[in-house]
Amino acid sequence: MELKKRPVIIDCDPGEDDAVCLFMMFADEQFDILGITPVCGNKPLDFCTTNALRLCELTGYTDIPVLKGAPKAIFREARTAGDIHGATGLGNVVLPDPVKTVEDEYAWDFIYRQAVAHKGELEILAVGPLTNLATALLKYPDLKDYVKQIVIMGGASGMGNMTPTAEFNIWADPEGAKVVFKSGISMVMMGLEICYDAYVSPEDLKRIRGDKGGRVAGVAADLISKRVDHATANGMPGGVLCDAVSAAYMIDPSVIECEHVHVDVEVSGMLTEGKTVVTRSFTENAKREPNTYLGCGIDQPRFIDLIVAAVEKIDAELAQ
Image 1 (tube, rainbow, N blue to C red):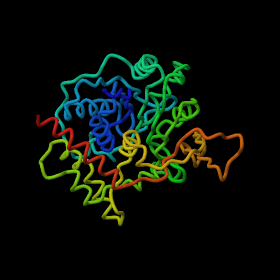
Image 2: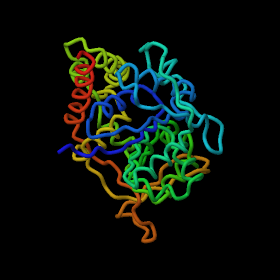
Image 3: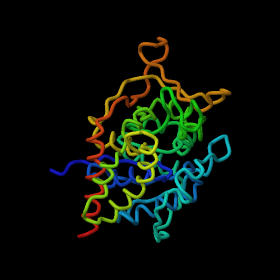
């Protein structure tokens, strides 16, 4: 009997690590990927949308619709990550301009339409700023009743990468993030701490590239290589690949250990704007019920196995 596939929307801002996240999700047959909803984040929206189209074409998954997303935060001007992901968002990788085009529908309308159609079974993987999801929740308040879970890459329990206290995806639209965390939808958060444990070592990078000359494996390795070189030059065991951690959880939750915590978002603090404030049981205020499963440990070798398996599978499909 054929297994029922899990309906998923991928909300992202490609992005080197978003690309690897997409490869992992595309390759796993348990998912019915309904669409990709780009959002302004790592780069301005036009870049993120074009990169999503390019990555669909690279992998042969051209039947996945790419929607129109939010060009800026809900209440703020656009905040991007500058050139951290290179001039186009895909590092030094140059992919052809896409033939595939964006759909004539906005992300928030698409999310709601699909959520209702799938009667509460829709899952959302969100690895960029949460503007599209917040817009959908504000426009369609009953959306919360139709989404099974939201798995995000964002935030941290005690560190930051955009400011000393804030992770980029939350900092880019803190008001939007607050709307999502307060929605009542089941939340899973992969923050910065677990991402630093999900590193790619030089040996891991060789495994990802492989020895068969696969196009997608080569692109994945090229996307990651700068991160690995930078990390090892600074005494770290490997490069950080944040968004892929959330994909790993979607594919196999047993790879990641989680704790049930309460998460809220600071939107106006002079020193803490965009900070995810995590309340654990041992610092618990009784009025703060847990609302989020926070990744707190990862099986790093199995994480790498998932990436290797994904790129090998896509390359094998392309070779047929």
